[in-house]
Length: 121
Image (cartoon, rainbow, N blue to C red; front, side, top):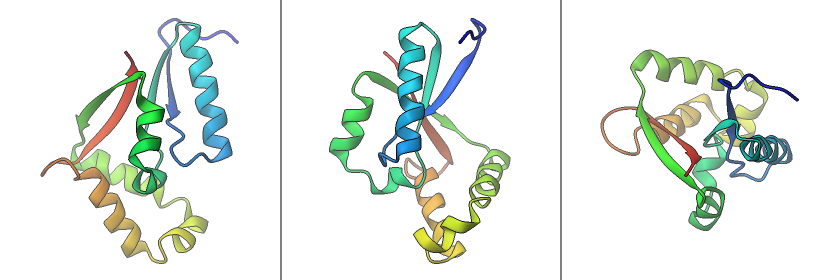
């Protein structure tokens, strides 16, 4: 595989240990080894259920960054999450509970919406 040197690859932390997320995460780790820039993001909704031990294990060699989201980007994220229609009733039982979960996650560090991501130290 050849990627442009300026390429940035986004991969899940694989917090929920779901096989597809673990697979993509392992590809990210391999690309990192090949000196590509890889940015890891929290897997939603699994980030809400992850234990601190699991979280620390997945991020111990990474540095966390936090970025504020403006309202437009926050709404864009909600719109994308709502595309997973088959999972909404299974995981949250209602759209209202899903929206509350999203709001808690993105407001967890204060009054402004924010997102966290990780890069190799």
